[in-house]
Amino acid sequence: MPLEMFSRLVKEFVAAGVEELGLFFLGESFMKSDLPEYVRTAKEAGIKYAFLTTNGSLAKPSRMRQVFEAGLDSLKFSLNYADKAQFSDIARANPLLFDIMLGNIRSAKDVRDEVFFRTGKMCRLYASYIEYDGEQSDRMKVLVDSLRPLLDEVYALPLYSQAELVGEQERDRGWNVTAGNRGRSGALRDPLPCWSVFSEGHVTFDGKLSACCFDHNDSFTMGDLAAEPFMDAWNSEKFQQLRAAHLAKDVRNTACEQCVAYQ
Picture 1 (tube, rainbow, N blue to C red):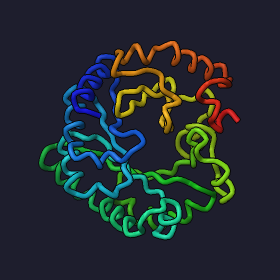
Picture 2: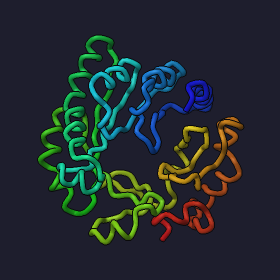
Picture 3: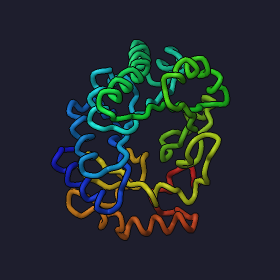
């Protein structure tokens, strides 16, 4: 997203009462070389809690130092693989990246603490992992235990259906696919009504306001922030109709019908 658009939108968010902003959507934010400027812009506009999720491959110490100094409040690593073999099998990426990711995660605390002692800015460090099946927690135990002293919290997430992008192929592998966006493992919410359509907005790089964090194809677009104010899109007739369907627990003929939550 161009910084000029980002700056304008953040001011609208803050004016509407938004306090928390995640500077990511479906991509890897550390690919953006000027990411610290976006963090700084958000904090200076009045965002109280700016956070990021990363796969860790590009979050090298120098890059983390920059976002910590810019005022990032939380950095979470998606730690979804127990070892190189599982990383290669699921991510279909060069296994050497696994060691790079772990090295960056292990360096995060030292970088965070150095920035805190020098500037007083504190960024919390987290990691989450996906429970693909009932045995994944056991597979993750050695790795998680080795990283836990370096992080503020590590927690498990279920394998979300991601608007049905995760489906039969994953089930054939014996994976447990959970309905909807139901929160953390051990504290799952009911899939309908989905809490996120009432409390979260998701904005694409070109300003489309989406109702879903799993919107990979613009099917959940509720408005265009490049052409209309944020609150107009947030309260749009399309968004209101979707929320009403969730409250009625009947999302037939809506974008959410494709989600496993409805099936």
